[in-house]
Structure formats: structure tokens, C-alpha cells
Length: 311
Image 1 (cartoon, rainbow, N blue to C red):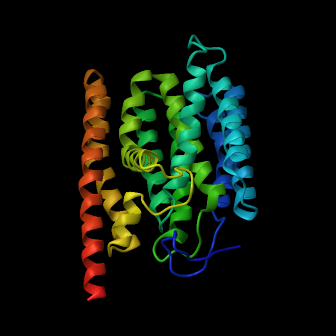
Image 2: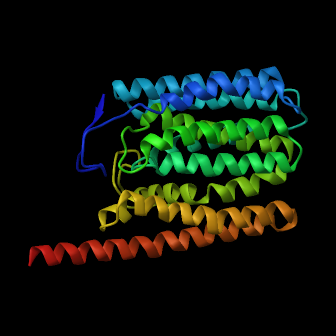
């Protein structure tokens, strides 16, 4: 199964896709034992809910990789998966069931935004490594070895795939992998939120580069009357490549944001919970401004290059 180059794609050579199934298999094998065997174990119902959700998202992604589906059946299965996990997460706790719709929508958005952001070599695998490892550190800081172990297992699975997906990629993740990574990062974030609600803000900060890019791109397309769900090349990482940058350069751009902006601010939000919400808002404001300024520079550079070629 080869992913062919095209007008709406950022690669130049036919490349096998669907390699993200390796991440899925690794997590299905290791996560249940990690969650249940280390100290601070999770209820079996939550672990089973996560496994079932991962199987559903991976299965519909695998199907879509081989036989493209319309967006609504795919979204329906994804929301069913996040609903199963969210119900298991809320059951037996003092948390209100009014959180259920929010969790389901957040999970569906995480699955899809990570799918949207899987368009160049190494980018999504890199993000999975950073966010999952950061989640592991947060879990360890609140005395949750089982959750920390699960986060580090997820990061290790993404690292194993990254070795084959780094530029020039030998294999692509495919929907089976991108959707699964999105589900896993959502699930780990939700589990940390259940342990300590204040951890939600550091997790949102860690994912700010992807959340800001995907959200602003889709909002921009929606306001311009375009089909937001159709394939396109208007994410910031795609503009970075279209304007002359390499896949390696674009991935490094996001890595720098993660290491020098998101990670330090997430640490500060963990250490000073009273400042966590303002810190999160500040990071997303900065991410939004960076998105606007950088995109304009990319568009300007591309138009200047096109004029130069035309003359």
C-alpha cells in the first residue's frame, strides 16, 4: 500500500503507509500490564475501555487507509470509541456525568487533529514522543507510577516508529497510526485530569503547537467557505515546506517550540498551579500570533519565488 505524491501532499516519492500499526500493536501489548501491575493501578474497566477504544480507532483507520471512507462513518466510530473510554473513566468517581459530552468531543478532536497534522516526515511521531514523555513526568510528579509507565511506553512506541519515519521517511504512519496516537494522548491527558484536574493545563500547554495549528487552520478554512474536512496543504507545517523548507526543517521548528516554549511553561504550570490557567492562555496566544506571522512570511516567500520563476 503506497502513498502516492500529489498536489495536496508534501512528499515527492511513493512511500508505504500504514506503519502506525506498529505503535498500536506495541501499546496493546504493553499498556494493560503497565496500567495494572505498577503501583497506583487503574480499575480494570478503565483499562478495558481504553483497549476497546484503541482497537476501534485503529480498525477504522486501517480500513480508511485501504478503502477510503466518507467522513461521517469514520467520525461516528471515533466518537463511539471516545465515548466508551470516557464512560469507563467517569464510572465509579465523584465526577459529574455532565463531563461526558466534553470528553467525547475532546477525544474526537484529538484523534482528528493529530490525523490532520500527520503530513510530513517525523512530525507526528516526534509530537507523540514529546507529549507522552511530558505526560509521564507529570504523572510521576503526582505519585502515579502506573500512569507514568503507560506514558513512557507510549513515547517509546512513537520513538520506535520515528526511527523509520524520520526524513527521508521509509514508511508513513497512515490513519491507523495517526488516529491512534491522537486517542492515546487524549486518554493519557484525561487520566491525569481525573487524578488531579490542575494537570489539564500543563497537558494542554505540551500539545499547544498541534492544537493551535490544526484549530486555526480549520477555522480559517471554515471562515473562507472551504470544506474544512477536505484534504489540503494549508497547515503551517505545510506552508513551511511549500515555501522552500525541508521536512527536517519544519519538524525542527515544531520541536523547538515544544522544547523551549511548551515544556518550560508546562513545568512552571505544574509547579505553580495558581498560574496554570494564565500560563496556558499566554502560550496559546503566543502560538496563535506565531502561526499568523509565520504563515504570512511563508506565503510572501512563496509568492516572491513564483514571481522570480515566472520572470
